[in-house]
Amino acid sequence: MTSTTDKMKGKVNEVVGKGKQMSDKPSTKAEGKMQERKGEAQQVKGRTKDALKDGIDKA
Image (cartoon, helix red, strand yellow):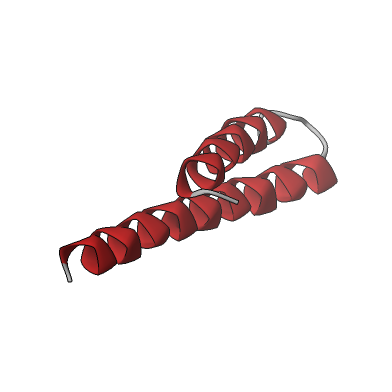
């Protein structure tokens, strides 16, 4: 996956996760929190790929 794809998928997971946290069901709230965290991790992965690419391009 490209860095842009990682960041986009991460943002989608964050938004969906936040939506699930609005639920009244505790299990759905927990699932939403996990999905939000997954999205955050995907965005970090995308930013890391960008940073590595920039470092390699400068070398």
